Image 1 (cartoon, one colour):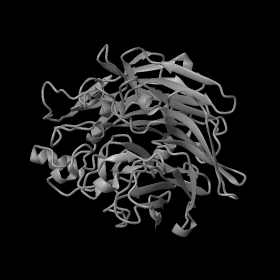
Image 2 (cartoon, rainbow, N blue to C red; image 1 turned 120 degrees about the vertical axis):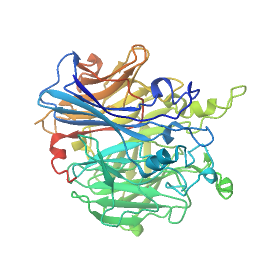
Image 3 (cartoon, helix red, strand yellow; image 1 turned 180 degrees about the vertical axis):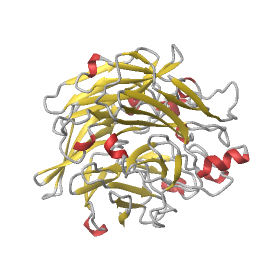
Image 4 (tube, rainbow, N blue to C red; image 1 turned 135 degrees about the horizontal axis):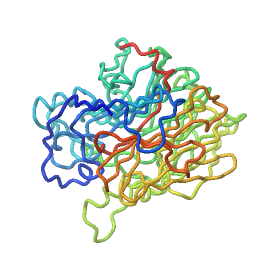
Length: 497
């Protein structure tokens, strides 16, 4: 392995740091590397694995304004492995956001985080609630040959070279980017059309918008989706003809919001609502379907069956864990990040386009989340799904699950104690047909807290329970984080830097 240190950043976090999500598996990285031709610990780099695995992480360099730090506030750092010619190269880079560069220049935090009052921000900012920093640390996707990082409560889209991870610029869409509202994390790429679907949300009517970029990255559709008030959507889904947005009964308490206090409540007496509209539809074409009250962080997929739309996702039984008698005040915060406390289970909704009725069913009793499947089948009926299991008490991934939606079979792999994985996308084998859904690999980063090391691990997609067939050594233990993606080599050729 040929390792080169590209840059060392100065951290101004306290030493020792008492925060549980800035230490341990969430310890930020301050060194950027180029590590070429990664050392193979076991197995070999598959020669039919060509593309990039990208993972975004929350990687703070400065303390929060009031020390009420939430892990989703951290600055975006992209980690990536480029697979080519039977070898693998690793790089990591901080996303050079406007907010990060301003704070580095000031030497302190300038914007409030999710647990802080926006009134404490020293400058105007970004986000659905405004006066937040756009850390661009939540999600990553590759569209029109460029990596796009995004923030979960809306902000700019930062464009990065998907191989070198160099920050290129902010998306402008030829001056049509919605700069006030920005774009939410969980943009959706349709590999069959090359389009990117997105949404945003905020505190002013109509409270949500939906849009489409074409395969070249040009904005071709952008319309309001009126909601009853400010909401907190996190994800969306699409089929071949439709987009599906949502209005869940978890949103900022209106009475507190009137006092500029952004505290989310779960209203169990209100239904969940799903808005179905044609992919190039107008506001008047949105049809709303009601379902049981819940909150969904992530949808798996949606597709059309006759006169119905079927959608899978992870239903939360307990979106806001209640405080328990005698527990310290920080415990509800810790439990609010735990998949087991939220009780996230695989769920299916069916929307009848003729009758306007919704039916739904639980598909699995296990607590799983962070789904991935083969990109080419998104928007059509899928058979295989890959998801993560969570470490009790933490926002950390301790296992992989493979669902066969046709037979009901379930494979699982549990990482050794103290070893935590990343969101793990399916990477098709080069030249395989999309109909062979599981013909390929599943790729992930793992951090071993016992050995203080990190690896890139490769699984055979059809044999998750076999464990990793290839383990590649990374130059340093990397921080935990949120979302990852796979982009095949064919999707990188259109990059225009």
